[in-house]
Length: 301
Ligand SMILES: Cc1cc2nc3c(=O)[nH]c(=O)nc-3n(C[C@H](O)[C@H](O)[C@H](O)COP(=O)(O)O)c2cc1C
Image (cartoon, rainbow, N blue to C red; front, side):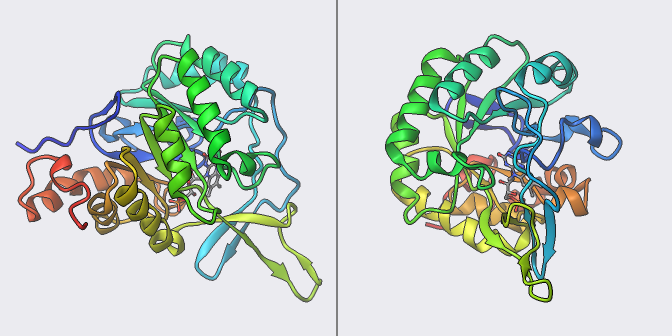
């Protein structure tokens, strides 16, 4: 009998397949398409302290090989999340990892304390990396700031803490190290890559926000490299995310050094993909004569 469970710091999951924040709504939307019990966990859309309307439209554009989005953290705020979404989410037969973004370090800490008092959550992911919100990018490009936020959040919130980092930096290693040193249970690598789409006939950018974040299969090799790099240089459990849509993608991230993965954009073009990847995982592990997921993590190094 294969053991699909994984442990990342204090976070224990039934299996390593999660769904990524912002690509699965608050799960209600996906109830008809996905057997939640199969998933390792669900990360609902980022919530902020106050409700946010998000960026002006258009907010998404399809590129030759990937999706560019600039949603801008459109959400109804943390109080609404706790009153309206969490009562539903905590009934689901899988781990729920809330995801928050603050405009300031203090906002992260206040929100983490508030979330930490709520029952029924398996962990808290800090979106330190949204490329579409002013301020959001600054956090994850500054190792000292990441250290402060993660350490202060840990001091007020008993949940396992995951720091979600941006790939839009010169060197991600010191940033991941800062998160680890501050006590993050894991790092999620990565958020979207900043890009731009232009309508040359109109002589203007297509997205209302001008720039957006590129996601989907196009970014997989880029995300895989960052997972590889952090796995090689920092002692911290990694959740790989970026372009994952097949069981081969999942296995590549695991052997590159991720202990778990998140499925993002693929949920949009194939809503049942995450549960199917869980079904396919035992066979892939058997191919490597592994009894447990941990047996293959980082084995490409
Ligand atoms: C439409 C859209 C909305 C997203 N919203 C969020 C969000 O609210 N919070 C967050 O942490 N990441 C958000 N992301 C980033 C994804 O969680 C993920 O990190 C990224 O898309 C890379 O993975 P993928 O290529 O599998 O989509 C969003 C991505 C997309 C495409």
